[in-house]
Length: 87
Image (cartoon, rainbow, N blue to C red; front, side, top):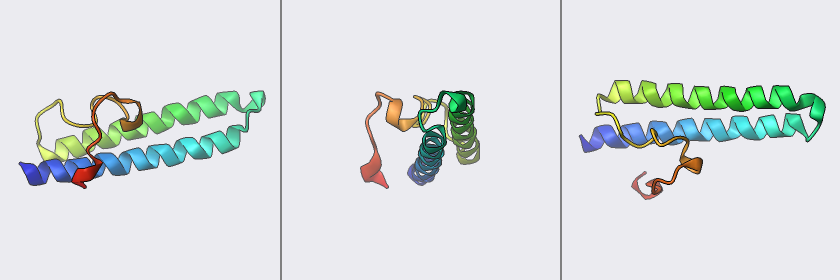
């Protein structure tokens, strides 16, 4: 079970990395220009959807029970402890 949790954790970290990169790219495109606000908000929503899809796929693949790391929301916005030291 520990190996499955570590694989799942690595997948969540990778998904969060992609999410953060997508949000950074969206911020550059937005450039605080009100004309780009709708595109920016859509990009943020899309990044979150991709994150949750990846976490759910990793969870389904790992066969771990519900309630593991990743279900508290994106790691940067969660009040859960960081498990970066496990990687």
